[in-house]
Length: 146
Length: 137
Image 1 (cartoon, rainbow over the protein chains, first blue to last red):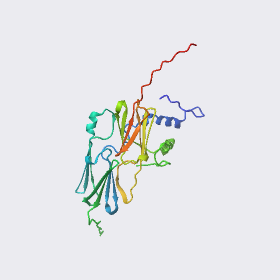
Image 2: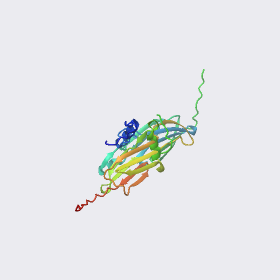
Image 3: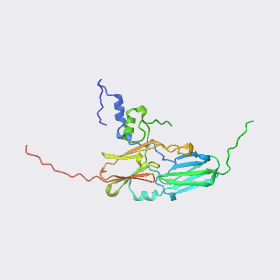
Image 4: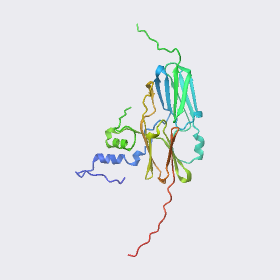
């Protein structure tokens, strides 16, 4: 590494400085495979809104609307997307390729009783947001404890 | 998951440097996945996945052959939404440093669109060979 280690007054290298030098070396900055953000299988955030509306957000950078297929069936939301990057790969020369390519899919069970006809989806800035409202007449049932 | 907030909020060199100053307070930086391709005329094209990031929270810099990308995303429960049932999309600080040995710092362009950051760099001009005259001593 060849970097000079600062010495404190006692003439001994300060441990703290040594560790800071060590960890700020480009090797540690250029993270290999740890802490990947959002890659792997489709990462989802599921939240609940007013009146039990279910909101699902999925990170889908670089996907176009027409690449994505959504389906709601039996209380399960399925997201499938096909990346068109396969074609690009053959023509371009890559030095490094880490971003997800190919097809991705994920199914998630939806809480409550979602209305299959009340689904809205929007793709913006690489984030797919799906909103489902609950089927009319869905009320939580009170259970009597005897 | 444990998140430790840095003192100065969002991303930017000051926030991250103060984080590194003390090991007990540093926040985890997630890696940004990148594709590095050969660009026009031997330059580079770097694509990074940054879905849902606002332009003002993304910082791109280039120095001594290393391209640095730093970004911050801290989504909270939006208005009208009650709670999260499932939370998998990582929040917090993201960064990546990429060595691009023959890249020039001139004319670097960056664009953020549809959740993809594209940075284009040109190739450094070949250094001119200069012959040096030896002076009569």
